[in-house]
Length: 218
Image (cartoon, rainbow, N blue to C red; front, side):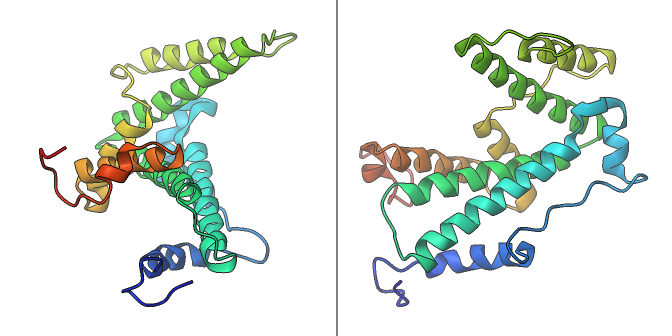
């Protein structure tokens, strides 16, 4: 690993990120976020949502973000292997996961936070339904399909009188979460768009990723 900031392979700019997740690292594992205290605001948010609450999604998203960053640390620090594709996959996953946790926590009021949780569950069950369709899965016994679970989520939103579920897609979540971290949503989303371009070996990031300012030259 290079240490000089004049070297093109320098990764010193990643060190603050690695240091930020270090306190969560324990002996052979990462410390998980605790379940919400019974009388906390988050527990109150979750109370009418049954098993479709936000606290589970917050904890699992945050944990996944930690794992992505730790995998990146091991790749560039321990193994000293920096290729043009895989680090972007890990960074993209971490950004999506941490943004999701922030987005779920930072709705302007309880109704919005509940709607966001149900929006994410709705998207989760939509993805599950797509998988079950692909593999021709047939639900038996007391189980429910992804489509049925998705109907439950949508019915719960209606019962609670929540507004139509906001988007649960990554780009929407990242842009909405960025201001909570004091960041410009357009710039953060633009950086996020670059990551899959590199990760999938596309051509356009080689033209645009190094451009610090928007222009009309290309």
